[in-house]
Image (cartoon, rainbow, N blue to C red):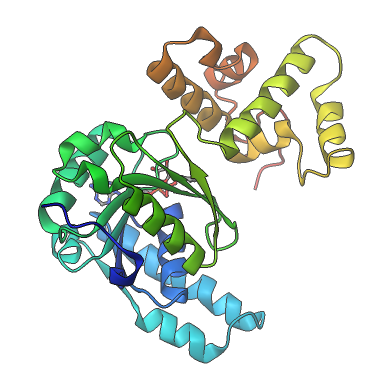
Amino acid sequence: MNPQPSIDSVRRVLVVGSGTMGTQIAAVFALAGYDTTTSDLDPAALERSREEARRRLGRLAEKGRRTREEVEQTLARMAWTTDTSAAARTADFVLEAAVERLDVKRRLFAELDEAAPAHAILATNSSTIPSSLLVDATDRPDRVCNMHFFNPALVMACVEVVRGPQTSDATVETTLELARRIGKQPVRLNREVPGFVANRLLGALRDEALRLEEAGVASFEDIDVAARTALGHPMGPFELMDLVGIDVAYLIRMAAHEQTGDPDDLPHPSVTRLYEQGHHGRKSGRGWYEYAAG
Ligand SMILES: NC(=O)c1ccc[n+]([C@@H]2O[C@H](COP(=O)([O-])OP(=O)(O)OC[C@H]3O[C@@H](n4cnc5c(N)ncnc54)[C@H](O)[C@@H]3O)[C@@H](O)[C@H]2O)c1
């Protein structure tokens, strides 16, 4: 018998992975009143995560968005551990936000399935690995899905909930409702598609920008000006590529191409060129633009 999840049974949440995403996602759940444990195999990452959560939640109080008391209560609901299995045993909902590697996630899902109560949903925050590549590592394929947050998770309202071929209605509805209860605006995807919705929209804009630049229609600087001043985007597609990382843009397209085999999914030649030259954007001091050191 497969006990189906329901929103009323969700009290304790486990977030696996205490990096950029896991840290803020855990804070989002705790702010909404959920007892939240964050696990990571790296104790130093956990320590950084605890400090970061403290700092970010403290800033909410400083800015008057939450009272000091609310922040203290939120922190009291948060725990950090290196023992993922032990934390999974009492979790009603698991959000995996560990490193973006299929082998790591498959091992984690097998471990989580073994330890978590039967009613618990196992969701992945992965941007590129659909849950259908993880389900067969578990004995609960109907209770597995993608729940995709955006960076910075404390700020961005969108959460994409992606149904895999075996995901049950109860899993989809519970995850959508959970997203609402933590103050997010869920977007329901009825099936898996590489990049999901938001990143596909962004990708379409970026592809067109790259085509226009390559064809010599306008400089990349002017294309960024058009995106900012005509479309109201906070930054242009080339500025955004530099911020996120040329390497990230390159690797995401390589992963998409691996899944689809479609040559159209390969990175754009100018992105490949920058990637191979080591011009990875802001973090390396140069991408499309040059950045002053420090
Ligand atoms: N960074 C983003 O902008 C972004 C946005 C949306 C979704 N995502 C997705 O979120 C996930 C995490 O990304 P991130 O940027 O936070 O990564 P990150 O590198 O900042 O953090 C990953 C953490 O996972 C930990 N980890 C690795 N193996 C583990 C294991 N077996 N058990 C427990 N912890 C383990 C690492 O020690 C590290 O602390 C990825 O799946 C990524 O696709 C990232």
